[in-house]
Length: 75
Image (cartoon, rainbow, N blue to C red; front, side, top):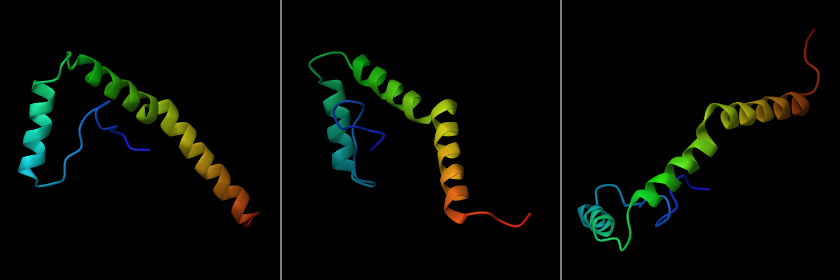
């Protein structure tokens, strides 16, 4: 999944697209409600996916799968 969920945790714009960037800024400024929920949801999503605990868990799973896949190695 993506880190940014458009409209929920932020806005995605094409690199170099001034028009899309302007549209995202305008959408943020003219949002019907406060932007704080967007910011909070984005921060929570990042913390859940990229803090130390999930990152270490994913690395352990990767190393474990590589060890089991390659079989026994030299002593």
